[in-house]
Structures are given as structure tokens and as C-alpha cells.
Image 1 (cartoon, rainbow, N blue to C red):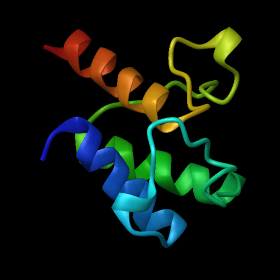
Image 2: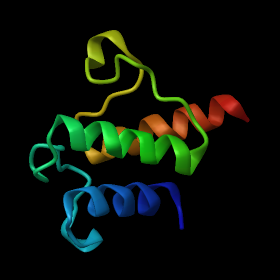
Image 3: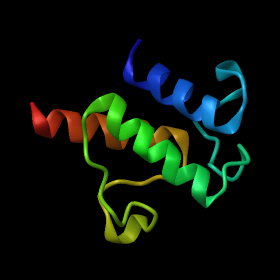
Length: 85
């Protein structure tokens, strides 16, 4: 499974949706994920990818990690993983 597929699977589980129902342009709100669900998703992503998402990721102007859409989450994870390599 690639990064995008893994992120979609994690988000789908949290949103109680099928992975094929999730688009890269979807926001957490589009998927019905509330703030607690978003925190749980972030914890699951950190564990799955062995990364640390910045604490201020919910404010893209203050963070390099943007959680405003599925695509930006995937891009952020790929940047963090590349920085670790």
C-alpha cells in the first residue's frame, strides 16, 4: 500500500466510510470527521508512518503540515518521511 492508500484507509476507518468513497479533495468536514475524530486520525497516521505531525497542523499558516484536505495530508506525510530519510 502506498502513502495515499494508507492515509485514505485510516481516514475511511475514522469516518466510517469505504475507502473508495474518499476523494483527495475531501476535507475532514466533508467526510464528517469532527475535531476528536481528526485527532484520532492524526494519532493513527503518526503510528502507521512512524512520524510526528506538528502540533499546530490545524493552522496551515503556522505549520508546514496542512490537514485541510486528504491531498494535503498525504503531501505532508511524504515531506515528513523524506526529511527522516
